Length: 360
Image (cartoon, rainbow, N blue to C red; front, side):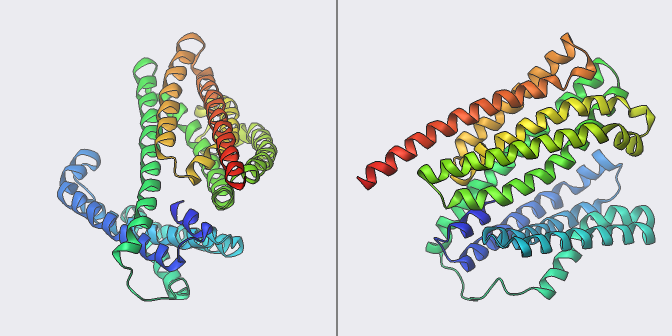
């Protein structure tokens, strides 16, 4: 997202953005490699019964190539070249899936495990072979150019990491709560419903971030407010279609993927998708703060949302029933939408007043 913002703004040279991202990616890979190299035996013994130590050590390399792949598509997203953005996104996904299937087919279980780390590397090397036009200037970037770009990119990195920790932390806590208070089977049903939600909401998130961040990054004042309202109307239509599609298909999808023992997951998903629809509406306003690098607001918002999600889900479990536990999620995203709307309108009014004062 940071790369998308910087390239779409056009205030710094695209080559410098790519070089700075690459330097940070190398630094991150080195740090993660040290962590996994030191702790690989412990992680292997604790999570995998002493197996797959070598696969764990390769993970940082796979993470590096995943970052390179993300850099490719972010570059075109920032330039709003959606034709190439879609082409490279689809190509990377298809090639990764193909490598995964081939490794699993020819090497069975070992191939399936190692394909998780090898497939992204192969996909990235393929793209590097066919596509080399993103680095036109081979001059090394100086520290004075690197520092402000790196500061922006690190802020976006902190937002992404902070969001992942609190969101998945809340989900893990709820699964253990259900396991302790009901059964492992119920926890599995809850996980299956939320996992299906993550699939379609993840695709939606990529779509909206690809559209909103480049647009918001270059607008301000009344123009930004007008674009947000236009995107909100688009999001309403998208959310309605999403709710209708999931409601119609949930029974069939859950039955096909998980089997009849998980049929209750479809009822949970029918409620959960209402919360997902409201979340989509909140993105229209939230991405304004992401594009403006409001790190503190974003992290506070995510922590608040995660805590409220857990609290209201537990209350729904206690006072309603397990199958209505997703009501807590609906309440949480509704509150989060109100908060982010209030924050946006305050920000928009202040920005418009400041812009008009400058013009006067």
